[in-house]
Each structure stands twice: as C-alpha cells, then as structure tokens.
Length: 351
Ligand code: UDP
Image (cartoon, rainbow, N blue to C red):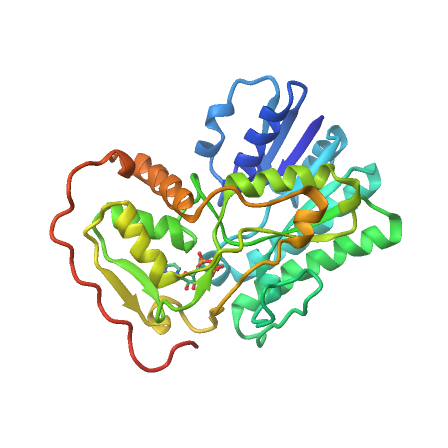
C-alpha cells in the first residue's frame, strides 16, 4: 500500500507514518507538509528510507497535491490549522487552510477514487453539554465573534463536505473526530496544555492553569489514536461514518497540573491565570469534553490502551530530550522545597 499523509510531518501525521511503515513491509508513505506547524525533526528518523518521500508544500498547491493523490492507494488528510493559539493569531489563514485544503483533497480523491480519512476534531461538538459526546449528537456553537467557533465551524464544514461526497458519489471516506491527542513530538507552541505543563514543570517555571482549573478533558495517547486511524481507513463498514477517537477518562486541568508536577518530580508552583489574561478577547473555553467510544469499539474493536500517566510520562520524556535534560522517570533526586500552589482566582469562572 502507498499512503499519502497530508500533514505528515506533524505530531499525529509522523506517528501515523511510523505506524503504517511498521505494519507491513510493503507499505510506503508520501508525507505532504508545508512545515508550518509540522517539523522536519518529527520525520528526520525516516530520512533515507526508500519507502518514505517527504514533499514540502501545501495542500492548497493543486499540482503538487494531484501528483501525490495519483500515486497513492489511500489518503489520510491530517493537514490543518491546529491549536487555539494559532487559530487566534492567524484567523484567515486557519479557516482557509482547513476549507480549501479539504476541498482540494476530497475533489482529487473523488477524481481518482481513493479511500480517504479526514481528521476532524471534538471541537465540532462545541459547547454541547450532552455528555458523553456521541457522533450523532448536536453541535452547539457560540457567536461568530468568538474565534474558537470559526475553527470548530470550519472543521464541521469539512465534515459536511466529506459526507456530501460520500452521498453523491459513494466516495470511500471516513471522518475521525480526535479528542485531545497527546504524546511525544507534540509541541506546546500552539497552546496545547500537556507539553506546556511538562516543559514548565521540567524547567521549574510556574505551571499555568487557565481559569479555575475545573474544566475537564480526556487525553488520548497518540499511539492509540494513530492505531485507530489506520484501522478506520481499512474498515469498509466505516465508510460514510463519523467516528470519535480518544480516551474517555476525565481529569480536571488543575488535577493534570498536579499530576504532571508529581510525575516529573517538579518543584514548580501551580499558578492560576484568569482567562482574560491567558487569551485575548474572542475566546471561550469548554467545561467538559468526553467521547462516547462505542462506535469505534463496534467498528474497529477500539479501546485506548495507554493510561493518563503513560501520556504524561511520554510527553515529559520528549520535552526533557528537547531541553537536553535527564528524562524525569530516571531522576532519583528529591525536588527542592515545593512552592505552594496559588489559589484559583475568585469571581467569574468562564468567559
Ligand atoms: N490550558 C491551561 N494552560 C495552558 C494551556 C491550556 O490551563 O498552558 C487549558 C485550556 O484553557 C483548556 C485546556 O487546558 O481548558 C486544554 O487546552 P488545549 O489547548 O490543550 O486543548 P483544548 O482547549 O482544545 O481542549
């Protein structure tokens, strides 16, 4: 099988490439990436392999994309704007990358009849409180002046378009909604919480919890996520379906900060920062987000294997390597006197 992975030098794309190459001697991958949020370092270890080709360019470059799609047997479309910070900093580019990129990928997949997996996001559930989120549950979006919903709406439009292709032409397409994927190679540069917390803990900086820290998330190890993506694309019964991919054990962000501190044996203080300071105007946070995983279990026998501690340890070990530090799991020394955690701010809990 020859796979095209758009966003192949990104955090998830690079792990998916590793997984596909490990799954069969015959597998080869073309990684299409403009190295904007992805990085060469993520795929450097694959350099020189005959079964790997890195194409540096954008999914919106039609000629390049067409060449890549034509040569592929199947496509994973992961290229996207990612992270709250990027979406707030570059709103036009974020929307355009998502909508134009997915439009181009789907049109070419249709022309060449290639199976395609679209990586979507749990953001499309928006502020829904109908937990756990089931794939057929409602989207609850905020006002259009809150930039977060532009991202969620663009990703939802991507899903509509993919499903429309399925209905019109039976394009073999499956949509995976990813829930807070974490692990090695994830960068904190775009606002993601776990690599940020690990880096702060490892360097003795305050661990910055936004809001009151009571908001909850379910973190899924990237290794579990890419296993699910590979199996979803190979499963004919998943075609035309939207499927949640994540883990369903929750932790509060305040609790996550404490656990990161423990596992990295850090002396960092946990510092609560009001949303108004953490994000500029136009941001709204979600209180809880829990996937229903029944559909993934039914279609591909999916169940997450990695614990939250695995997620933290692996993310911290990667951050430690980047910082040139001893990986936390091998540290034996006691931390210096731990700084007290500051109390969450009183008053308004959420914007
Ligand atoms: N968050 C935080 N400190 C940080 C980065 C994020 O407290 O340094 C919070 C953020 O406000 C959110 C949660 O952690 O409530 C998860 O944030 P992330 O951007 O990783 O994912 P998402 O908001 O998409 O779930």
